[in-house]
Every structure is written in structure tokens, then in C-alpha cells.
Image (cartoon, rainbow, N blue to C red):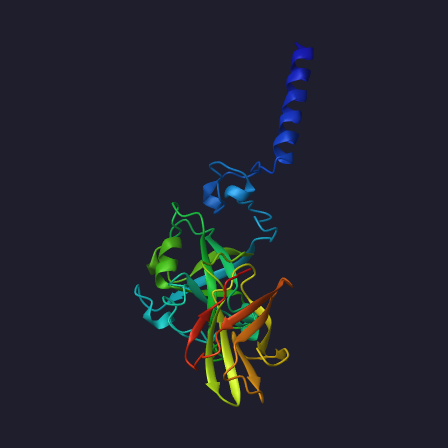
Length: 284
């Protein structure tokens, strides 16, 4: 009998090591009340979520979430990232405004986050694992003394669109504790550029960016010029001045926060006009 127990133990250890080597996660805490995600099948690449490490290797962190606007999301359009109609630009209502601690002076615009409601069984929706949102706006601090200014530094806070908050919890909760982590952005089609300006300066609002999502550097090139460094005007609006680019096809070099750079050639044709939006053939 002792020999049989030893053999069973050895087999269990070998199975565990084999499962871990294949990339599966063996949860150590399966209590749904803790807000953790209970896997139902598949490997990490197929949707397993590790409560301690995250699918992208990012640790879950603590924050809070509220919502603004109504179920139609009208108040969430445009905002401090420089985006416009979020429906037309592919973001829809799966968005959030970030507090100062997360917004990074607009540098985080376009980044994607996964959030789950935790430690609040009265309000958390037990049927929703997590939501994924894109940062499209800024939740400004309020310096009037009060105990509930959630967007003030150093607090990490997500002001969600109302439909996204409603997926996580009952809206009458008002505010909920959440766990969050950075995740890769999955966007359809290529990187897009909205061009504005005049013959002496041009801005490019860069959106629909996959991968890291948040752009950290942009260079522009006319078909008869060398590469020109653009500067961040605000959010994801990038500016080039003192260069005549009208009448040339435009190419872009775009770098995201993970250090990846792609060259997008001939994004805008020779006859491009201010106010138009152009889509590259590639994305991150």
C-alpha cells in the first residue's frame, strides 16, 4: 500500500510539471468571491488569466472605477486624447478616462487595460470575468477639499463609460474597487491618421493603434523630403511645423511604448487634403 501511495504521488507530481510546462495555469484560489477569473478551458493564449501575473506578464494592480455620461456614451466622445467620434474611430464605448496617476500627460492615450470588479459582492457582477477598455480621455483632479475626489493624485482611477461600468457592476454602486492590468490592444485594420493644419504646419491624430496602443514617437516624410520629427501637441495629436508637405504623399514612422517601430509608407496620396483621415496597410 505504501508503495502504491508513493507511485500515485510521483505520478501526480509528473502530471503537474507536464501541465505547467505546457503553459496551463493551475489556480491556487478558486473562490469567485475574490474576483479572480476561474478558467474554463484552453491555454494561456486561449484565454486563461492568472490572477497574480496576467496573460501579458503584467501584475494585477489595485484601483477604483466610476462612470460618466449615460448609456449612449455621448459625454465620452472627443476628450483630452485628441480623438473625435469614438464610434467612427473604432473605439466605441469600450473606453475610459484615466486619473492623473495613469494618464501620464496624455502619453497613455490609446493604451488598453483589462479591469475586473473585486471585493464588493454586493455590487460586482458575478457573471462577468473582466472588461477591456482603451484610454481615450482624462479624469481631471478636483482640488476642492473632499474625501471622494478619486481622480486626484496619487490615486489610480478609471472613469468608465456607463455601459462598460454596467458590465462590471450595478450602476447604483457609483464606485467600485477593481483590479487592472495593461494588455495588448487588438484593432481592426491599419493605423489611422487624421490630418489637420495649413501649408505651414500639420497635425496628425494617430489612432486605431494595435499592440501597446500608446504612441511615444512619430516622424513624417513627404515624398520629396527627408524624415521630419513630430512633437506631441496633446494626447495623440502630433505636430510638424515649418515644412511644406502639401502636394506630397506622406509616410510615417510610428513608435509605441514597448519600443516597437513600424514604417508606414505612402499612407496619404499626393492629393491629400486637410481634414481627411487615412489608413495605413499595417498595424502593430
